[in-house]
Amino acid sequence: MPVKQKILVIDDDEHIIKLLAVVLGNSGYEIAVAAGPAEGLGLAFKNKFDLIILDLLMKPIDGLDVLTQLRKDNSTKSVPVLMLTVADQIKDIDAAQNSGATAYMAKPINVARLQAKVAQLLDVSAPGQ
Image (cartoon, rainbow, N blue to C red):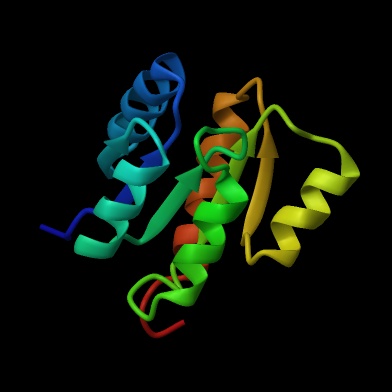
């Protein structure tokens, strides 16, 4: 039986966390969730994930700060990060890409598009690719 790919969801919206856990869990992925930036960074640095889904607008630090910390650490610098947020202005997208985001998707979530994007990101980051 193949090993499930692991996804970490970092978001401060409980409804989004539950939705992503159900949708991605039903798609066959192993899901870990963090209800905020500090918890998310702790999980990311202690565990190996194949993908991190990160909200941009969080407090006390925002997703760009989290992303910057992820990119500076050797254990997480090459993990693909999908920014998932309501902030969908060009300046927000540019800031995320300049900080090292692999992909960017706006809320509200289109489940089919999300599943396709996750599959694409995980396929590209598979070992040996």
